[in-house]
Length: 134
Image 1: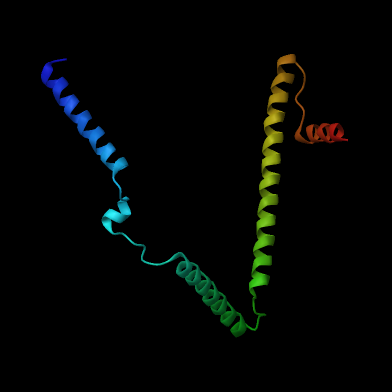
Image 2: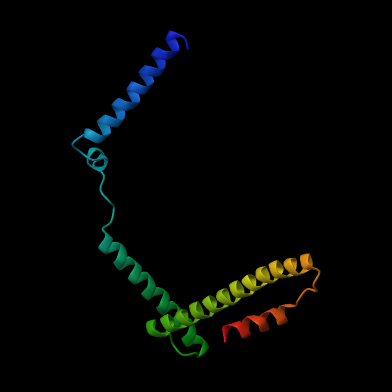
């Protein structure tokens, strides 16, 4: 490496180290140096979210009243969401179980083919798994 390249590399590294030390050892934080303050407090943000949810629930109930349907309450809405989440979780678990069984069956049939045995079906494999669980 030529001397000019080494000097430029040393100057760049020194500049970088100096900036890092300045940032670490400075007595004020970046927010203090910029005089940065949040525009709203966390309490105000939470209150705004609660107000938004109340407004959306009221708008939905106004539409339901016009159609002659029963009004929604926060509790009934939470229960409905809980049921939806439970159904979604069950569908996901069923899908993952089917995927696991398909992968295990593929591996089992590959071993059976290698031994010259006939492949088994999904129903037969499920029956053997149920027999092993008991």
